[in-house]
Image 1 (cartoon, rainbow, N blue to C red):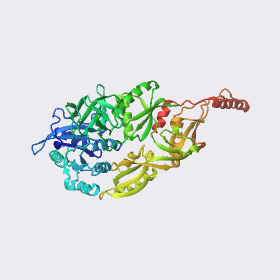
Image 2 (cartoon, rainbow, N blue to C red):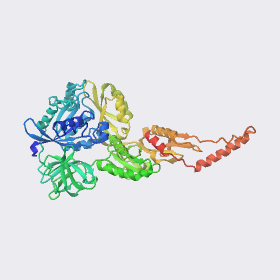
Image 3 (cartoon, rainbow, N blue to C red):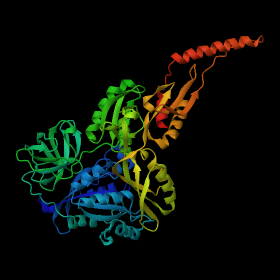
Length: 596
């Protein structure tokens, strides 16, 4: 189809504002899907996506729409994830479009991720069409949302289209607005093919199948293409588009989105955001490529050590569908053989662990999540540390820097005080506040990433009774007083419990861990000391008392010295046992402590 009749757009929104329902309705209205095939959350193909009501992977779909002016247009929709952990997926999807539908819930108004996604879209110079969804709800307030669009996002209120994706109200107006307002794609003017790779999946028969958007030239089977960032050359075997199932096409032209299969064996050969070009006559790369770096690390171990090889194979399969997930083998004295895994964020980590359990039937245990610290040594070299075991001795360290995030928290006015206490408790600073409307404010804060890893989001939700929302972006590194906290059992350090914490929190953390360990370590024939230490300094200590045999049971009456002699002998034996005995910590104890 000629470029003048093509429109590329994506849908951006906060979680749960009806993005997937709207895309279902557009597919149905354009006749891409028949009534018989129609089902809820059609583009969310994973069980997890359906259960949690979130989109994890971006899905491209091509629709043909006959407009009111009688002409037929090709509409390419790229459905994007809403969660902050997948913001790189969102930015890649945006760079493949000319326009974006911004969906705002009429009952909830503008939320934290709405603001973040609009800024991303504006940075890419996209045409934004605001859509006020869920107008059929009894407590919908369309006027207030229009006011927020103008005041918070600087988008004219009269351009907004009221709709209800569930009831099918306003869908025709949205389709007409896409045709009228979003500009058609223009060629870049490069000498040959330029196509952006924005996603990929692995097919057993075709190898790596890459989702592309053609910016210049055309893609057809038999062509030799080159990937500019890896420098490798492949022959194109098949091209096509999705409706939502893949269908084969003769070629992909300027402005069209679809897929390319070119016998690419390994997913690591295709970097997301890479440019495909003609191998014989290469063009310069498209802007915006960046390597995706994991931000959160955690060890994943099989509960049964015999499952190690199966876990390794499962992770390799999972990585084929999720290029952001990285892993490498590691061993632990306590947990045996396992893997050190990197994730984009906490939700990503939870999703990967859940998929390993469900799709591959693995019984796994994950260690406490940590972030990447930047350590400057006294000789000037800089080392990146994601595992407490690799932290150098304190006398070799010049300084430790930790990753920071800039967080935007939207909350009702009455919860500001409680949230500021939470931010202070998490070692954060409040930059400034911004009033959104009569009921809500937005807090701009700077926080250390490792403080918001575990329960921060849950606590915002509980403080604000579910009305708060947050979004964050990475804000570089900052020097901090970080130390390594070790746990010693009977004088021996246990590597699985080591962690890097801020000095002000080390004591409370050490005490909590020692107390938990005291509950789960079984009693031995001798007394066991559990200690939390920073270097050589003990900051918390607990004791598991010994099991004692009643050695004086056979003494009935008689002189006290007989009893004393037996007790002294028992004491000597315990002393000897303590010197040579070792404490076996059962697997359940590790699982319990890591849960805590």
